[in-house]
Image (cartoon, rainbow, N blue to C red; front, side, top):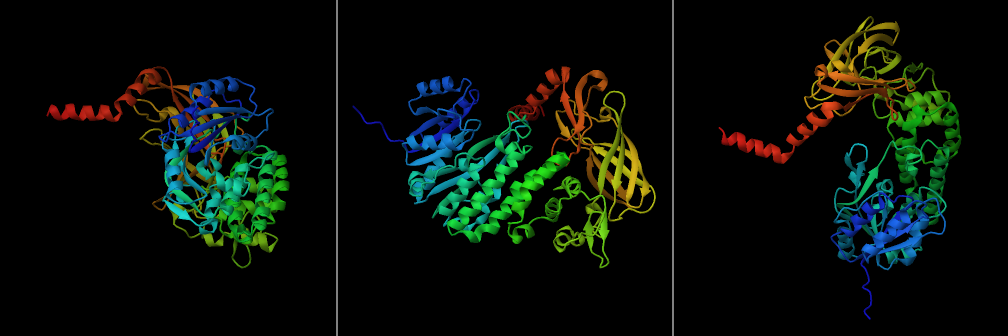
Length: 557
């Protein structure tokens, strides 16, 4: 009787109630260019058709093994740990059932291990938006070149790359330190990865893509992943709890000197995600959020704050001072250079965010915007704030908007201002001029009619989302900025018969449901546009068709 061959790598696929996507994940492992591997499907006690599907996958390939937890653990740690107990290979990887491995992932990471003695190898993660198909690389600046590091101290920025699924671990390394996923908590990857980074003597980074991470950023609350359940205060509590566990481990393991780098990662990544959602939270949620995060924020290294952009420091300070409504206003400008509604100048000429000089020295330091030179920077880079204060619906998708523009640094001259509403579905831009009239010093208001039916679309139609901009003109110079929508107005949906009805589209106008809450317009081709014109245009745009057309054209010359 022959002895079963020992696999080189064990890939654990964890799953819970995901019978539909599990075959895709397993197939991505089965088609790896490196064939000598085993696949362990670890089922966290699914109640759907997952057990049957897993059994069929195991029956179809002897490399596939199945295990099923006796009860649901509610997280990723237990199914991974149970799979570790039965894994037979000297190298281990982890895959979630809604993701995939690119074909060369196992071969690339295994080659790094065989090249030199390392504790783990890691590669690039491709993020794929399930709604748009758009692809991007997760933390590209950290995985852009091949390098081997002698510990996390060589590049503490790697705390930002906290995914356990982007790595292949030596089993001996995990067993040497009894390193397992912490059970009973969420954000287990962050603690596990921090421990792995600190305990590893040497690890290699390769630029090859080793993981396809499918992201559904606006999934419903029932289907959203843990990281996309930021609307739950329990989610905030879990994230803070894990940070405290990491802090304790850094001290216990002799890596306390890395605390500022780890704190910077928390502020720049973890807190920043919640901050971007603040405009969409009510006062009760904001109060609970402040209760949860403020005690932890008080423990962070001051240097971690100093490394942040000023706009993020402003939001942090307003939360810490429990100026919650102001924090919501400030968060609408994060990453988009949106001005506050007002600025205040003290007796020394220092300029501060908001309508008053902050009371404490710490608040004055964090809310001081003087160095931004808002009153003297070039006009194209000046900061304004454009908010819709009233919406009146007209025929079809037409809306009459009242736009209020805040000019806290007083960059605009006294009197009426020239402005335009800009919208660009396709290549041709719709420009709608209007006037902004002074309301009081630093505040202007005007009315503008937004009619998406007036926009010129490509012959093949247009499918996508656009956010109108407001452009100001002053002394021959221009400045374009976001148009912030009321966050509560109901969506407006209408069928627009472009080109006298030959190219109809369904248009939805609504507030953006995340981030700063911009006015958002969505086009969806319908009728002949969707069934004939657009498929034909996409076919003609294929590289093969274009090359054939060029060959025919050249032959006819």
